[in-house]
Structure formats: structure tokens, C-alpha cells
Length: 88
Length: 88
Image (tube, rainbow over all chains, first blue to last red; front, side, top):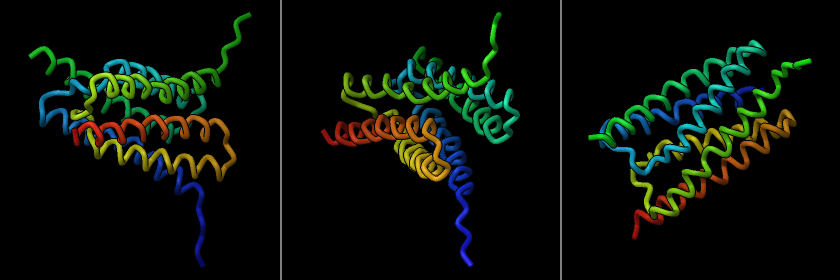
């Protein structure tokens, strides 16, 4: 019997859209530059992710909280390294 | 009377994390390069967003569908232009 579980798509989606930023962080650290990565995109995205964290906290949703806290940390690191490498 | 609406954080978050990719698309088109943007990140992110679309369709969630379709289109365009510009 094959059980078609819709929730699995949700978990798969959450894991992928969260961990997707890890290769960007690794690439930025390796090449020591992220000139082509948009600063406005990073700031808008971080503000949005922070709003998801506030929303997730208020509706007591652990998946929304966990996924967005990891996404926030990864993108904040990308932003910090982008700014630092551009100064060098 | 101030009404504190938690849902507003959700909408604000969805709008920001969706439209955040527009400045990246504009920057890529202007500079005609996206070398520093991770290819693996784009592919993982697009796969994740596609899963959100399938999930949103299955649970009949219009906000999830709309936000992720726009995010998918913006990131697909960034991927296409990144590949095209790298060939030039």
C-alpha cells in the first residue's frame, strides 16, 4: 500500500529552501567574494525571514520557527562575509 | 484601539521573502553576470520552491501558491541569465 503523504512535500520543501543557502555560504567563503550577490536582496530577505520568525513564534509553529532561524543565520553570515570581503 | 494582527506578520513576511529576489534579478541584468551567485543554491532553492507549489496546491493554500509561483519565476530567470551570461 502506497500512502501519498502531502505533508512530506511540505517538509521536503522546508528542508530544501532552508539548506539551499549553505552552498552560497560555502562558495562565498571559498572565493572570498560575493560582489554579484545583491545587497538589497539579502536585506529584504533577512527582514522577511525575521517576520516569519515573529509569525512562527506567535502562532507557535515549530517548523516555521526552526526553518526560518536556520535560514536567517545562513543569510546573515552570507551578508557579513559579503560586506567584509568587499572591504578587503 | 490598536489591533495587533499576527496574520499581518505572515503577509509582510511572504511579500518580503518573495519580492527580495527582484533586486537580484535587476542586478544580474544590469551587470550581465552572476558568477558569485551559487548554482547549487539556485537549483536547490528552485526544487524547494516547486515542492512548496505542489504542497500549496494540495492543501489549497492560495497564499503559498501565489508567493511560491512568483519566487519560482524570479529565481528561474536569475538562473537562466546566470547561465547565459557565463557563456558570453
